[in-house]
Image 1 (tube, rainbow, N blue to C red):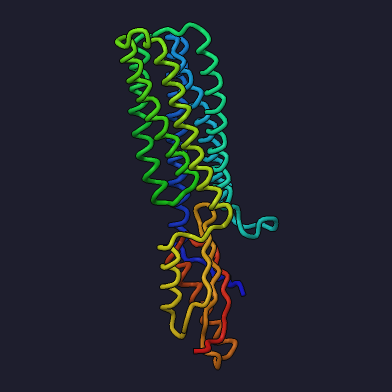
Image 2: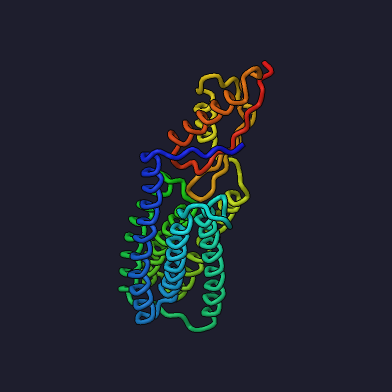
Length: 305
């Protein structure tokens, strides 16, 4: 049976705060990426730095992904409707999945274009290109730390993907800065430092996006939630009076929220009404103590102890 008691105001407020924090992190990432696209692309074109242009194109992908994540979070928090009786929570995971594919595809295109540039006579960009890359690296690292903290607290697949993208950007921009500063002192190899640095950035992006892809794919396949969450659900349910045992427990993460399927054993001599009331109490406690649980599907079984 599936029971549907109303949530209390406190749990609703906590759930709403989860989405507010997630959307704020997405907006911050979007705003920063827009500024960095302008800085990197302008600097790369004016100073003839292929690595800086490659980094700028990657930031354009970041802008697109930030918009997608923000839109998905808006969809994910919508309530159930006739066409989506389980809600829209997976929109958040789907957005993260799309971000990983977008980053991977963009990195592949950049790799091909950078390799083609080796056929031309490369030059050493002006040292100011390294300054731009260094500043962008510091900014991206700050944004990574903020987004990563929010993603960890909310256990958000989309924000984790976005945070990893920020970190790869920070490392990539830092590597570009070091390479451009060192290029004038590397003799004949100096002119090739810029395209080589661009290839390194592409390699990091491909590896990062592959990790994101695999992690989010597991979530979309309804993988069991982490052990800590499952244990908490079991403890809350087992603590309800007259609950003898928890026979089956499945907890799947869907976006920022969870769905629980639980089989509770009670004394077989109790009436149907008594068993039903115990089931209500189990679900009420789970919803009250775990505001990010979207719904609980509960089945009462006779205890054979």
